[in-house]
Image 1 (cartoon, rainbow, N blue to C red):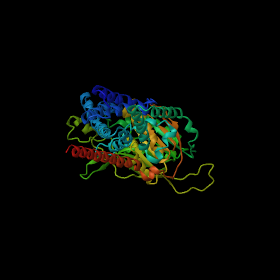
Image 2 (image 1 turned 135 degrees about the vertical axis):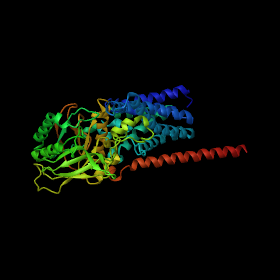
Image 3 (image 1 turned 120 degrees about the vertical axis):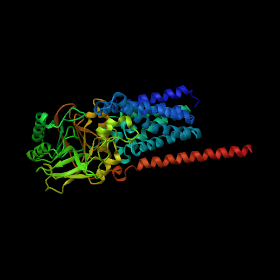
Image 4 (image 1 turned 45 degrees about the vertical axis):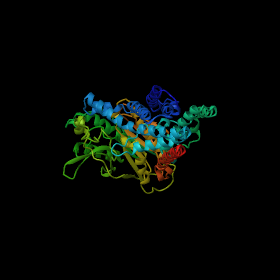
Length: 527
């Protein structure tokens, strides 16, 4: 492809700027089908230097727009100056941009062997690189993976029960590669096929709902949206200052919880500590007065090796007698939110380190138990208890983490989160979209309780069956049921992503050997 340098760079910038609008809450329907063409096309035949520049520009603009909420979190809640907060954002964006640079270098290399080979390999490479971004040491981060741009398409979404989100990403990357190949080869047939498939995808968005099963809910939980404003710090007399609000939450929880199976409060939205007797007494009273198990997000303080008290972001459940019967400590912490990675290098974030750098990561994928209560139409005796799994906030974006609860026997998934840190950016919408995919991957009901939105109940097929308005204090009666069956993805995990990694290595090694063989043949001919 003999494109001028400026057009290659401008196209890569355009791809990075446009593609974020394919995700929630914008959901620009055409962009998932062609947003990557503006990156793929200029990489065909590009030199390594130009390919790296294209990948860097795409990644910089894409991640600046996708994770710009990091700036507000750092500045408004982390206590950093505007310059320091911008520095954290830029440093993180440049780190994330390494991955599109890697993809661009590999695709350009394959295209020098064959444009067709490069287009065939593109979806494998894209999945492999995104898988690497998710599981990178220290800074593993999965946000706005390509497949999430189709979270609303109920029919296509069912693919993830087999492959996880990586299968949906593969389909979209392959779709963009098909258009790239059609344009490069000037194939009218391929363009026609792409156009007809695009019409089918856009036109069939609502049709599959008729064919996707409806899940009947036999149980109900009460999800409490606490709606506390985010604060950089809390005074020691916070409970006294907010006694009226806590009384209101207690009343809402008890009144709604008396005829439910579980009361759920979100990820810690205020200084909720069980080392504080004022909070402990209130939490126990809610469970006892409602006669219902009470699950609540708290900061757990436990002594470390040096006897110093260390904080954990935890979910704790009290039984109807007020006794603690379950605890899960968050395993995957938020970088720059709950801990500061590479803190020795990020000296400008010293204040942030002092504020959030002390959270400790949990170690166990704990599951809790709820008693079996037959529904009115089930004429049977109560059976053994049912297991549930809780994942906290940011953990919802990691499919391999959430499936561990299903593998451990969880028949219900619960996500507690405090998305108030994001403000009213696109992040809460995107967070909810990614959490919905976890329900489908594992074929489980998902109950999602948040501080200020979006609190919702998602059925095992990805339907949102109940939702509470954002930025209000209230309760949502959320239907759910238990399921024991396991999807292929739940059983086998990231097998498809690993298949893409292996295939990518095969494409690269094969192209390298072919190029070396060609160079040796040319040398012998000249000799």
